[in-house]
Image (cartoon, rainbow, N blue to C red; front, side, top):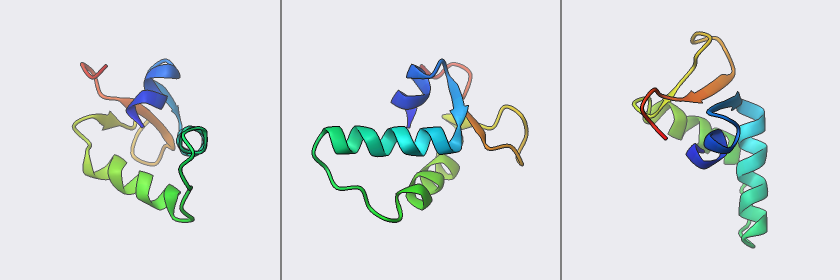
Length: 69
């Protein structure tokens, strides 16, 4: 997630993050689980020291927290 956000300039819509993580997994020859989106959202919520919602909690835009790069 952090790699995707970094390559997107530090922030991106949740769906773009999920799709890019899935694409990276496929490029490495890994399978993409059906629950990938739910797992990514869970990681995002668990590690809020590293990730933020810059437009408020109802926003689907995700970003790296200030100082994370």
